[in-house]
Length: 224
Image 1: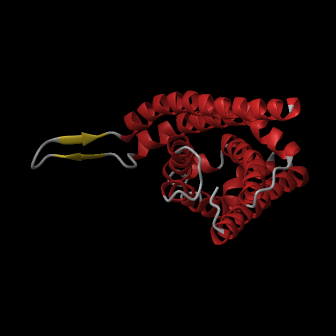
Image 2 (image 1 turned 90 degrees about the horizontal axis):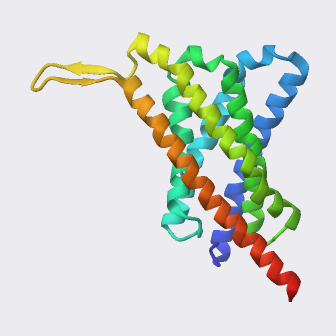
């Protein structure tokens, strides 16, 4: 993290905004499920989609933070995590109205926010130099379940969207001149699924290494 007091203030405000946004989404989804049961699944996107889009667009700043040296996180894992959410949310879900009402979208949003309401408070405290051990342990442990499940939910969302992209031809096009060119978007999505699974294993390995480093440091502190 940056040692500049102004940057620390900026980062803490950024993470606080993200935490508030994701907490609102998580609370809204939980309350709607408790009140309406499975009926709440169908209009999840319509009730929280706008806030979700705002939070995900704001997360692009996390890439800028790394590039500018404000944060010390690795660029590539962060890039994968940010872009995969943007692709799933804006390219897949937002563009296909039929997909928005599917149960998998509700499950996906729930998993995303369940992870973010842990991750952003941790980053907010880290920005001001506070290490709350219980939250830190949770952050370094919860991803083992949350992240792979999120990626599987993302992959299933893409799979569910393929028939709609196929029938509607969304993002697909064909040109005859000056050269014959055909672009079939469902093929691109199918290829994306492969890269997504490869990216999942890469990010998990990075997270696991970070987790080992954290617990190794804790063990050294106990011995001293």
